[in-house]
Amino acid sequence: MDVKVGMELHHDGDLPARSGMGSSSSFAVGLLNAIYVLKGQYVSPRSLAKQAIHLEQDLIKECVGSQDQILTAIGGLNRVIFRKDGEFSVEPIIMPLGRKMALQSRLLLFYTRVSRFASKVAQTQVENFKNQEKQLHKMKSMVRQAIEILGDDSVPLSQFGELLHESWLLKRGLSESVSNEKINQYIHIARQNGAVGGKILGAGGGGFLLFFAEPEHHHHIIGALSELVHVPFKFDSLGTKVSLYDPVQGGD
Image (tube, rainbow, N blue to C red):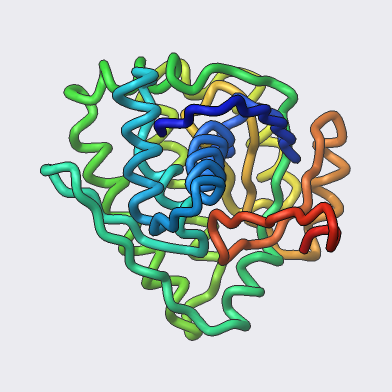
């Protein structure tokens, strides 16, 4: 970044690190954005995403994907298409506002209190990819199915939950490190108490669990998983942003 003067950084996170929520990519994108603003330069979200990918994959040499950097930089619900030449395109997922709110009201997020290094878990998956081609193609086809479900008001949203469960069964088969007895037990308990589907987020091995359930079942699921931390959340549409503090005016 060619920063010649001293700089002091303070980092605060609402969620714990190494939890599968894209915190590493959020940090990388946010740091790059902040430094560019300090230098008086505007850089597009797409460029920030590409630079964050380069930072994590090429400079730090972490075994991580490319979706977190893109979604963090751009924000919103999107379909990301990766090409073999390293380029990508981003297509916003269009759905009625009521449909989007209905989806959000049916999702539950829980922290397992288990942190792990995503790159280590991801490495085991990458090493096994050559033996999982059929499963990977199936998981890719689910993206189109999910978008069709979300965009069609006549289709019950429960089909999205069923797809979530189906994708989890495929994901946990990618590597023995993705799941464990505890994670499997949590998902089983949630489904017994009304969840249609659920999965571990990120590379797996720990971190956060996401469930789809009708709102009337939420209190049963939260009670049954009382040893976990229930984390309320809302969808974000802004992506990375910088708030400037003015010592005279008090900031914005």
